[in-house]
Amino acid sequence: MTPTLATAALALASLGAVAVTAAPAAADPCGFDETGSDAFYRHCTSDGSHVVIKVEVAHAADYERCVGPGRTWLGAAGKIQGAHYAGRTC
Image 1 (cartoon, rainbow, N blue to C red):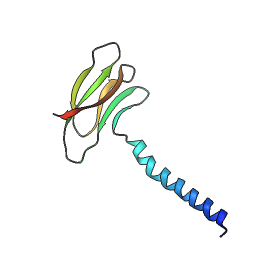
Image 2: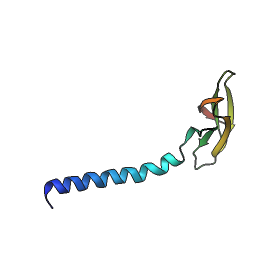
Image 3: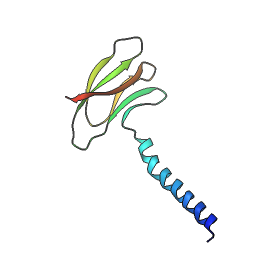
């Protein structure tokens, strides 16, 4: 194999490895996520902990909520602007 072909093969192999490892993470992101109609927060943990998140609401007061492992529905995507870990467990 010529050096140019070897370099191209290595570059393509590297791109393939990135695509394979990046796809699962994008399918189930940790933290805030929304679809076209709903907003969610996914708490990714292996220890079963519950955490406090701050939910940012459009045209209303923000609030805190305790969520457990996995995906929690927060409300309509048009109403919920975001959510983030508040830095403590509950």
